[in-house]
Length: 424
Image (cartoon, rainbow, N blue to C red):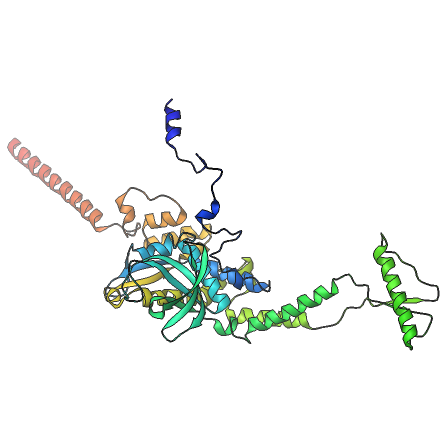
């Protein structure tokens, strides 16, 4: 009976469900996510999509925090503010903080710029610069004004997108650092897309199932009447091939068939390979990075030349727009932190951990968290100490013990001398 009473108190989404409920009462519905900007992704399917997705995912792996710095500009502690919660836990009802950054980076790479819009705040962003942000959305920039921008933003209340005008000083607007490579009208990626379009059109033309035949008829076609007769003969052969179960037709013994099976020569593949290599070199990536076979030097170069400029553009703009002058004077900042151990293999973690501990850079519990182990309950594992060197407290304790032993030996010697004196 105890289990049955507990089950009665459990709420289920299917419990007491009204089969006559009108689902349109809870908002508009769609077979795809309405908050996603699908328009900028549906186009030419080529390496551009895979590269942009790879970059956006790598940027989203970097942690962004609202932090407090010390007097020297060094990290001191994380400020658990609503903005930090948006960037790391929940940006809105549809996206986590990590997915918000990935969506924003993809939008920026495709369109050249992107806006992070504070949708839900505790004050009017048109009248004040000091407010707490509870909800962030990715906005597509439609029009530019001197002090404002017009954005396309998703409204989660009714599931529709709206065009809104917001002030620039309250909206995080990030421009693509690689704009001249990716988004210029005559950029490398634009030329590459045009060449790929031509190649796709050529391949589609070649794969339509045409026979490419020339039929030599036993009569001349110089006159209009004979030309009409030749056209009728051609239509007759086409009907034979289309209507036949196995695609078999017949011709007269005096007619000859010549098949044009040679393909059209073009240099599109060579041009596409050249533009692809140029795009890779300008962007600072290689094929090994995309297929996961890059070594540590390649990945370090990739993070330095590609990921770091993008994440710095986002954090600098957030610091400029989302933090007031008063907050910045109080040493508040928006900083990013990348985990360098994500690219380290297991066989190298032991040597790196030993180096970090000996040089008093990381504690034992910090290293255990990187490996995936739980921290120990010992307080000494949270201290920056070199385990290979005896600490001052241990040395003082040892010296005190040695001192105590020496005093005891002296007292024993003195007592022995007295006893010997009395015996004498």
